[in-house]
Length: 268
Image (cartoon, rainbow, N blue to C red; front, side, top):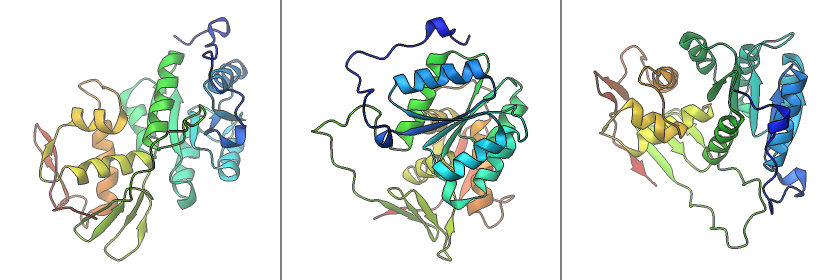
């Protein structure tokens, strides 16, 4: 159940909530319910995020283009332009490819959730939701995107990892720049979820990876036995990297076991 206003999370003592907002990861909340919008803003800001608000789909899409937030909390049912359409239009623009999207939806049917993932959402939360779970999802995506933490950076923070490029079947996946280049040297736009999934495959070539492993590795959470999230993501990846997505040669299905990444991978 969604926490009430009285149950709002209070800032942790000592947390750097006074840090310059310009240096905080930015979350755009697109939500037409004023009470929920205020609740989400309060708790996200208490966790150290900079929050931008939009109350309908058209305003949300405009702010996504103007502010390029790190993450979008996107309600499904919005005035003027639905969350699904906002997400679809986002994913058509290369400069918005790295923005993570969590769909907020009252629709609980699996087909509806899959529809959100198919247009490019990285995760979904069904209303009514537990606020702590939502914040955990936001933080999980933050870690996956390698954003700076909301709290002040530690003086002894480790240096960034060296750039690694994974090459397979003529393709090049730059894990630092988070870019994929085709054999024809054309950049192929990947969503956050697609990048994480392809990275996992490329780091485990020649091994059959179960759906549970892929879910846990790429999404940072466990999922039910009928969750088809990975199937949707694999289908999207195949349409981008396979010569014939209906007869895949790079990511093959292994009946009853999961998926196999076939080509050899060279790391440089």
